[in-house]
Length: 274
Image (tube, one colour):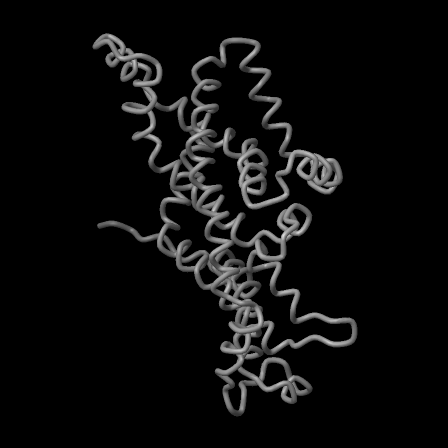
């Protein structure tokens, strides 16, 4: 007879409390987005008397949502694709040559970048992107690729080290070169880690506010987080329409994450443990 372990109520209570830190703000955002401005003077968690679905239409108009969403999508997709292609290559070269002092030094150099706060290098980045003519969407994509390199290499290297070298040796015996070995053997095996890095990069690039704010110079290139500035002015804020806009910007990222969360979790665990 199999004996079932009892429920860990302390851990369950802790998880429930932690979930409230996400659910409560989300509930507050939804009810605020459906209220009239006059209702904000009451209790913030009260349900709206008459849901104002027109707040979403107004947010769509004020932010020019299709254009801003297209800008965010172009930057995000470009950052994800370029990150997967370049970061995996760099990590493969490092992982297979960690016995070398040079590559081991490069690995620790990249990982050490995780401890450098972005505000410290923000001003030089602004000046360099402007001087090089990269204060646009293309420059922003490159910055996402470069700044994601440290964490992504940490994940990729741990995962690649778990792939048997015998697979590569068999391919080389058949006459495959280094590029062929990577693209035909290693890269397909990186699917779980590619999914993890891709989703994390997607969420970062889609939701990021600071980098687009300091890099993009053209108003027509503004992303969704930037166009939401339209709800703020010197003396007041249109909270109901603003919160409707926040939900509209959140929806695509939430759908992508819900669809791919199992790959994110499994990939992070494999990269960290192995």
